[in-house]
Length: 466
Ligand code: FUL
Image (cartoon, rainbow, N blue to C red):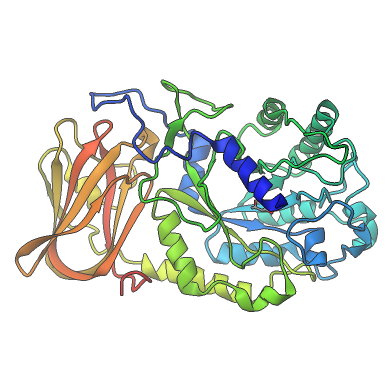
């Protein structure tokens, strides 16, 4: 019941964006239309592809998903806590932004906050001198990865919750702490969940104050989910839609608005286990490798960031099955995309510089100044077998392609392999293995003159290509 309320609230915050699967209207293909583009931080974030969530706190010790706020800090004692172990496992598997639940809905703070007694300082762990967020931040920075902080506005412990001005002040003070004590922060993750306060009053969050605090203290941090820089994809399965636009109706707080639209790319959150927190019975329910790879194709391969949750256990460590699965996942992704079979192959295009598609250089793109459809044909020289076609747009110049097609010449006959819609940062199309000596990309419809940086071919053996 409560859980439903939380999910609904987050949806409500995003109402307007979620229905926007279709192309943003009102823009026609003219020479250089005004389209929103990513900030440098959004661009770097999208290039990173993989981020990891660590749900950890009193729920880890109570076997619950949502705490009540009445948990005794005495239960928090992860006696072998080692943030470096978490960070190593994430880094080896290719994850670049690591986000810790510094405070979940139960209100227990994983850092010693001056504004509440309900924190690690009241726990027996390290004699009350420990700081989970501090150790985590140090390990993330030492590994040269990006630090992310999840801090729940909904707080079931804090007595002033529900007295809106008082609680908003309290929350801003806590935000200020986590944003000033731990070095550079790359992402701040706000959940929209908003329950009743103990006094029966409903808390009205002062989002503008929250955003202003982040902008002031960490101008480079992306504000995610209930925030204007990164958009929740709308489910917790890790799946984006086939058609996924980073151009969206501008949310409140957007940095740059162009004709009512902003750059608001999607993030796909999902847990490696059934729950967000660690539960003793779920060590045997870590998602199989094929499931995780399928998620990769449906998130990263659909113009989105994957945010995979891996919850530490009561020892304060990632459990063995999760560590093993992450290593398999990282190795599989590296192997699958290790060799681009189209790299360096000759391209003939109906217009523009099609050669940019196979030159392996992200900075160059095939630019089609006017007139669609336009096509570019890759001569593979000899029959080549592949099962994934990867296309990429030059998103520093916005997202433009609305419809494309991929055809291949198999035994002298052309056949259509893909009839697609959006491309965006990266589109991965899976198929049964195809052996072809020529592959043709046709751009059929676009908001503006398309700029496509890459057409790559891979033999992956991935799930969905059997
Ligand atoms: C949800 C929360 O209520 C869950 O507990 C979890 O933190 C998930 C990522 O977001 O809305």
